[in-house]
Amino acid sequence: MFDDIRAAEGTFLDRRAYRADAADLRADPAMTGEVWKLERSQFFYETGDPAWDAFCSGDWDRVLEIFESERAAIRGEAEQYARLGLRLRRLRIVELPPTPYLRWEMYSHRIFVESGFEIGVLDAGRVRLFERERPLPELMVYGGEVVYQVHYDERWAPAGAKRVDDPALARDAANTVSALYRQAEPFMEFFGREIAPRTPEPVSA
Image (cartoon, rainbow, N blue to C red; front, side, top):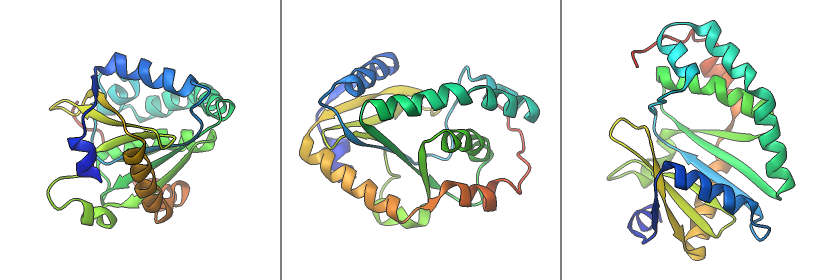
């Protein structure tokens, strides 16, 4: 199924167009139900992100301050999903020990969970069956109708997405990610065991 998504014909959107397209899709009254987000890479290049810049400079207090300042907006986003009749669930694939990036990201994800979003964490060993040739793609799946294969550049900075309008493929993707999600550990359990006890170490941007 993942190879089918990679091979599928679709509309290629740059980063700005992808964000606008996805926002329009969410606002469509016909689009309801589950939205799945699959995140596989252990590092993304967070260009222009003040919290990432603070982390790279070793200012962990500033990182936490920035994340906390985003709480109200994230809660509003969760409420908007609910008003639109959408349920967003994120499946975060992790490799252990967690990378510095992942440790940083998980503190952001904690705010999302505390603000009403659902995130499950799955050990990368559980998806090896799907990764005999290459890692899982980064995906957004809307309502069993639309799949976005999210693209990144060579630095792993966001570079847009390919939109695939294929309900059968979208349903397969939703079912597969849902099955993996059922094997996942609740986010806060993972955070308490693997992230909170480790002091984050800054990295070079």
